[in-house]
Length: 382
Image (cartoon, rainbow, N blue to C red; front, side, top):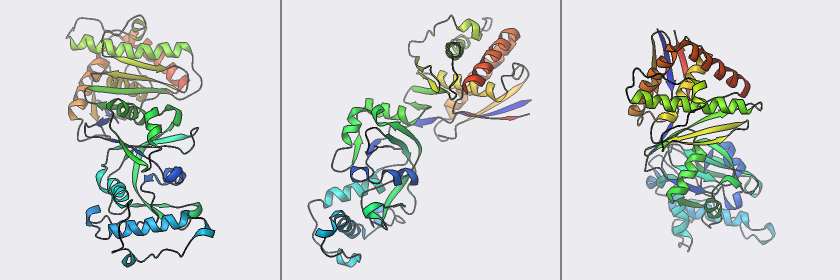
């Protein structure tokens, strides 16, 4: 028996997930360091927050914020206009009066190290409108902040931040205009609450995800060689899987499943299924549906690629184990549905040996020519 371990590698986005615009310092002066360290935080040098007891557990937080603000203002003042260097001793700030900015600044620090949760998404704008922004997912807060080194006038100082990962670089021109406008707010940190804008940001951050009742998956082409024929093959793959899932769901056991060449002349019947296609290479096919069909399409392609498109690989008894490393605690029902549909579909296709051989041959040629891939990963055990 051949066993396949299929990792869907798909983000399950909860309804509690939030999106923030987080500027990398005033005018984005820390953008390059933030990108290198994969961490973002308030624009306050020498903050040195103690997170061992959580943000609320640092009894010196207010004094540290006052000190960091004083050092920041001193460093930003021209050398010829500076007064004496601010003290670095916290005792000198414990009982100083609060300025008008205090509640706003402590709110920003609290948001970074207490209010923002692992799994929330941050958009970090590039200071250049022609550059690329970072769209990333926040990681769990550690026992200590990440230290981001200062440069230029801040050389020798460090900024506190929290880690992010699963990030993408996105052209500033591709961000929603309202997000770009938020980068100009004085705080440099703002939550994006509009549901439509949030969905657009999620789509920029993740290739494969589930949000509410909608599932999204993406097939990418990575090589520059591409032809209209390759586009037809990949579009036919999507149609073949989507229509065959419908046939199998209706328990039409005697019905013939569609092969790739037949699917070229078919339309997807589901009104909920949507495609977004950029057929040049490198390019992509994004699939949206209120069922797991997009995940099944990518599962079929990933499994076939793992066997080098061997038409006989699923003719005999085989078993597919499906898991999701990106959202292991939220995806069991989804995993089981993808497993069932993928196993039955591949077995049904393999019964029509000649048609399935032709399907595999076409997909292999397109795969080799265009570098077609999904984000799903497969291990084969024989």
